[in-house]
Length: 486
Image (cartoon, rainbow, N blue to C red):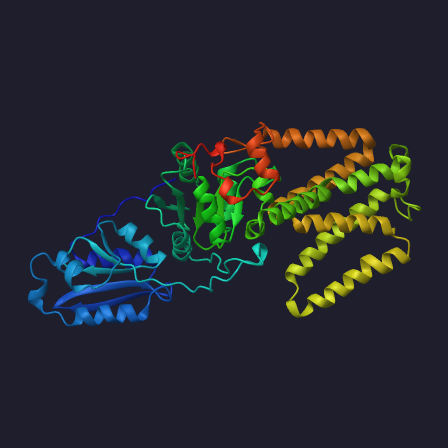
């Protein structure tokens, strides 16, 4: 990433003010404020962004400085100010004006003092923030109701609240030449594989762009590669307890300022099919819920193409299942009916996102009448098509990972088209190509289908069955944890 040239702080206040006014655009932006003040018969200047500073703290600090006498700042002025007369926790200094500019735009207040060749940075910032309520897409019946928010410091605090390990590391980075987006790489040093941590930090440091408008999603595309692969190579979570669980296993989390979603990496295909609800119930109940979820996910991918195959080649069905095929095909070919409804469901999903809550019921009624009753009555669709597509849609919505559900939907459409073109060969070859594609994927060197490919019996058993927590005494082997025992 291109580095900005260093600009040393001058002893002359006027020279520093001239540079900071131009770099910060004091007269061009109404929210960038310069306060020219004089304390202890010494000229000073404060630089801050309106809305990023806690007014009460700044007023208190200004009141303290206003009570100083000239002799109180004689000698080592800088040391006296930061150690005695600025009573605040987060105070640091900088001798680079370009760093000062970046810090002020990020929220801290800069105090420039005449005769001092360093700038005092007071981190008394605050951001507009919502409460840490439970995330909508990761709700549980029992469990914590807090969730990550858009403020980086809040998210690191929510994580530390659950992990009091002394080796929990929160390493700070900035990405984006213009945006200077704050990023934290979080891991437990005594558990996480240092090689893995190094790879992730190296990938982040190589990001060369002017900004990250989509926050964590932009980060994922830069660090994961394989841009045309629909499957997610990292997992997102808005639950602090889920992030803490993965940190204890040896994963690395990436927290991006401005986003409530924390990136968990590396991950496999199976991580996207797990949900906190499974671990909030007894092991047997959790195992049942996981089985039902897997069944729903498989149905969302393979059920529609399989039913279509049986519809066009009924000789493949045994006599006992001869009722599976449709009695009539309707006015349109079956594959066209499926594709129209697939597109219609995506249109409804997008419409639901943009529809105000007060109109959601009306949208549902329109969808039910349009796709259900009227479409069947006019002969556009047949009942079996709507039934099986509804089952596939339920499986899509049952997928815990939103990104995984969208990828599975594209694969379902691809399998459906392949089956319509080549029938049995298209269905079988499509599944084989899907498995080969997934087997070739890697997330930071970790096979995407592990422990299925390469096969590990004990780990694969834990994937299929929700084991009791006391029996899960080993961390996942593919993470190469420094401490393999829980």
